Image (cartoon, helix red, strand yellow):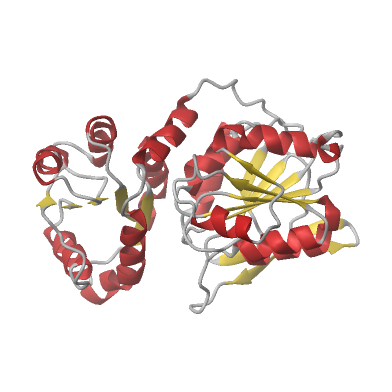
Amino acid sequence: MVVDDSAFNRSAITTMLESERDIEVVGFATDGVDAIAKTLRLAPDVITLDLEMPNMDGYTFLRWVMKERPTPVLVISSRSDSRSVFRALELGAVEFVAKPEARISKRIESIRDELLTKVRGMLNLEMRKVQSAISLLARDRPAPVARPADEPVRRKGPVEVVAIAASTGGPPAIQAILTALPADLGASIVISQHMPAGFTRSFAERMNKMSSIIVSEASAGERLRPGMALIAPGNHHLLVKRGRDGLVTALEPTTPDDKYTPSADRMMISVAEACGPAALGVVLTGMGNDGAAGTFAIKRGQGQCLAEAEESAVIFGMPQEAIRTGAVDKVVPLTRMADEIIRRCSERGGEV
């Protein structure tokens, strides 16, 4: 079901979806009130959702559908609404697609392949996993402990860099982890979350406000420091290099031929080369196999690797492929992932 107050967008999205024989648009809705009635009557398998609508907006509808009729929701939003998208993901939306700003047919059609891939990936998705992740975010946590950006944190354990890979379902999972880490975590964190340009900065800013560690979008030539997390920019691959003054970032532009952007494999392989046994790889929810080659590289360098358990992964594709390499040391549900990272980054973490 397509939910959008714009007749142009409804028509364009419907045309793209129904260009595939096995996808049927059972109906459309023009606002949240209409969407509730149509959801009850049509029982769609997937809902595409615009957020800004009259009468009842997408957020109110999301709260209703997650409580009354849990259904996979794909947000289709403009890049200028990046902050709104992350609020929607916290409310239970599974994924999002960034639509072009201009209402030009050829431009809106540029999202066709991504739209179809994500809709297919959301079929038969277990909504209890989505609800579980949202419940985890709603848990009471201590307020973030403010720490000046220039206040040093020393490495104090066997792990130098934690490399986190995620895709579909990743933003809430990353939020659950980052907000549970202490300000004095003795390791640096680098993150590759499949996300388009224009969204990663907003995501990093949001995580920084909620977390005790310092979180920012990575820039080129930035020095990695313990207690800091860097998120790969949406239009670049994030790499880690060892220089004379320690570990620094490098950014490589993505190309149309790249299957995954930003690439978790490329990031994790660079961490394996730079850190060897002091690397910790973490593969979270997502479609595809990005992170599998990176996991293998980290293990080959005598580092440690974790993968999210099937019981919590919204989509088990990426963790499953990492596990199949035989390089994963432990499979961990999201509820315990932050504690496992903290343990392995502590002085005693490497002994177990």
